[in-house]
Length: 366
Length: 122
Image 1: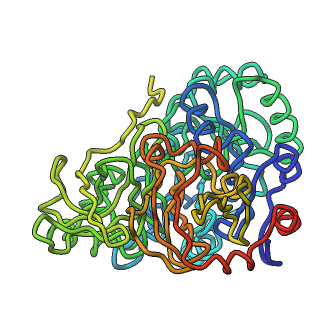
Image 2 (image 1 turned 180 degrees about the vertical axis):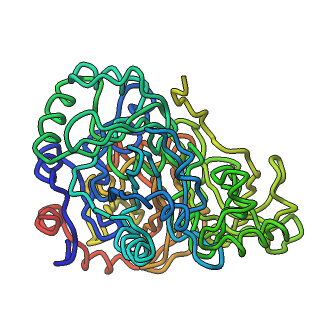
């Protein structure tokens, strides 16, 4: 049952007709599974094409003569150094270097950028960005869009049959193929795929075309979570939070070297100090022995029973064929192959530190 | 002749000769989604009504299955260790969870029959 404040997807009627089971996520009533079930939905995405309604996520257009300067202040990013259509994973950090949100920033034009933010942080993100924008000649426009993801090896072919050619678009690039559309080759599954923000009427038309293709199937939030976990991708609020910085989260690769050294983004000093000190804990992949899943929140111990860290996300990996998890362990233990133990209802389950991802990424990089 | 009872926690019990075979209902397995692990109880374990007897784990979450009555575990369905999906495909048959010797058969009077359970899940 949903309360009055729960937000509903513009295409909710389509999901209901598709037999979706709904649940609450980040203030939204979201399709968790469809009749195929999480296991089949997950595997279908890796084998063919999964269609996701991610309209709970928010698109912001940031434009104006100082749009790049504003983003460079808000994020550890060289926004002006991005090529037109290039996308980059970045963050809003607090003064302590903690991650307020992770975002994808795409350069649309000389002085125009698209920012894609997480559902649960969208309101805070907008407030944060608007407060910063007071010092810059830049405009922030939240866009009213349906946001769809189509992911999997057949995603491009299903889009092509639906009349959308993606041929020249490479991973982590985004364009505006039609009026009020934003399409990027990116996603949250580890597969080749696309995210498309578009007006509701266009979305209804596109969905009808895509679902007419037997390769495309609706995929719920449950499989979205197992797909991203296998792919080693972080969920903000679980794997990265305002209490974790990019160094401990093993996400420094997202910050260009010169920005690390001399960027003037919020949290720069704290992050530089954290890098200098070296993080006490690091985010790692965790592979539980056997079949029993180890879930977020489980405490980790070393072989001598000393506290070693904790699990932030965990479940079963349908493609991996075994339980998969990620979490934080003290830095000396953060090496693939080291064995720790997770406390699951009083039983210590052996868990091996594992490199991420659990299933290889299959992005189309060129 | 076995009699089948149901609980408001979506379990079924098939009782014959003082032994109850316990599982979750088809409605419950549908709600849980694809199961990937079942933590089974040890034979001989004594349970009081409301104790966690089994933990069933789906891709996404772990859920407790409670003892619907007092009793002692006489057998756990070991097949589920290698094939937990039996609970999805045959919840009221091959996907049974455990068998228990009833400590107090009068507790059965507080459970539902199939018609009452169907009304309960609407």
